[in-house]
Length: 380
Image (tube, rainbow, N blue to C red; front, side, top):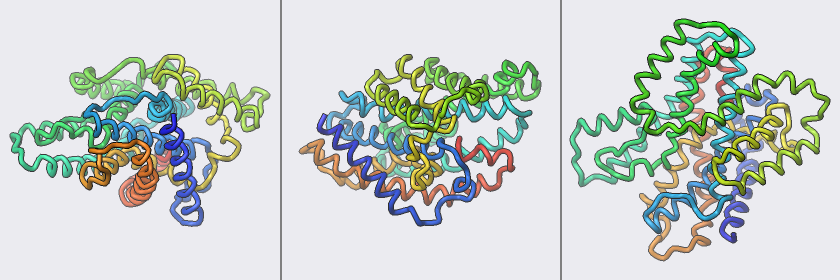
């Protein structure tokens, strides 16, 4: 419990320091600056919370040689709850897009490619470079390496050049992108169900691509995560009806409800059905305008929200580089309390690098997207 409290305290202090340091810096895009949405700040909190989870998991991996969850449900759920809410955000945003207007399927496809692959492929390049460095004495067959890279391109981690710990370099975060890819490919079918219209070509193309990928994907796909997207879908479908309720969604009572449920979820079993479903309550409140009494509107959190995709992809690489490449900590004499003191370094370093990669890699591609696609990209 002591380690958990120290990590949470250091996490909060690190985020506060980042927000203070960036409060006057012109590193927030004009779209995000003028957009009123609790989801922006929420994404910043979620992405950085995952850092804490993988930070402590990495510690026990170095000590015990096993990559697994810890004995602390709170620390485990600092990975689980953010991923769950990220899936809900995706389900909500894209259901709203196809439910309230006639979608342009080509633009949606283009927006997803521009949003995901430039930054993702950059992270894969870093992973490849590190794996090749760590396996310098190994000469795996070239075709095996090419096949491994191909699997990374389709969002499945695989050893590169025979290096068995390749997926540990980025904490294997690409697994969530696989579920998002399946959801995007399911959008034409979802459109049929919600709008009772058949976008023939979109359905055919989506099903063909999904069929081609399913030979690899089905080994990694678990149906339980569908519930999280379903919650986001339900919020999008019933949003207008909920807004007609005579409830002050931004008020203190709703804030207390959101906080209480989030705290409860931090003590529940990770990815349990109960946790997945009740998380929908605070998520719906955030969509309906609750910002936790202004916390999610803090400029620094919105900056982290814009860079959240980079943070998510890069934090594992930063953790691995600091502790496995640079040997910044002596795991021969492990002490979780002294190790915890490195958390602010990891959070601030990851956040700073991610803001830079957002502007240098992500933003140029987002800027090229069409206006209608660009409106959703920063939130997705």
